[in-house]
Length: 214
Image (cartoon, rainbow, N blue to C red; front, side, top):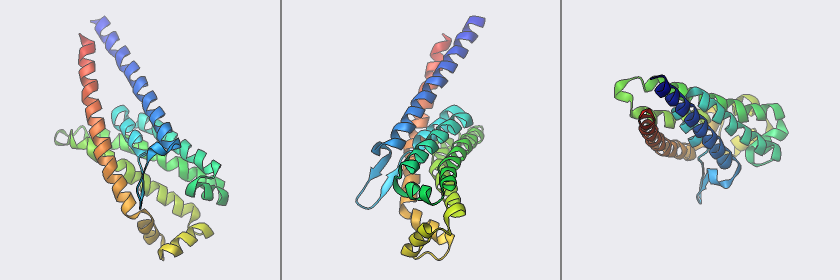
C-alpha cells in the first residue's frame, strides 16, 4: 500500500513539473514570437493568455502565477526592446511600463486559478468551470492591464494622443474604444480554445493517474 501511495505521489509530482515546464515554454514561445498573435486584415488577436489560463486551471493558482509572471516578463522584454505600445510606454516611464507589463499578468494567473478552484467544487459547474475560468483570463488581462495603463499613463502625451485619435473624452471611453472588438474576439477565442484544451488534458491526466495506481 505504501509503495502504491509513493508511486502515485511521485507520478503526480513529475507530471506537475512536466506540465508546468511545457506551459512555461509555450508562454515564452507565444510571447516572444509571432505565434502568439493571429493577424487579420483588421485586427491582431493575442493568444498568450491561453497558456496562462491552462496553467491556472490544470496546475492551480501557483501554476497560473508562474506562467502569468512569464507572460509579464516577455512583455517587459518587448518593452525594453522598444516593441509596440509597451516600447513607447517604457520610454515615457520605465517603472510604470514594467509594472503594467508584469503585475496584471501575475494577478490574472493567480485569480484564474482561484476562480477555477472555487467553481470546480460546485457540482453543476464542474464542466462549465473550465470555460468560465478560461474566458476570465483574457478578460482579467484586459481589465488589469488597462487599469494599470490608465493609472500610470493617462496624462502622458502618448496616451492623450491615442485618446484624441479615437475621440475618447475620458478613460472609460478610451478603454472601450481601444479594446473594442479585438477584446471580445480574444475573450471568445480564449474561452473556446483554453476551456476545451484544459478539459481534454484534465480528462487525460485523470486517466493516466488511474493507470499509475495499478
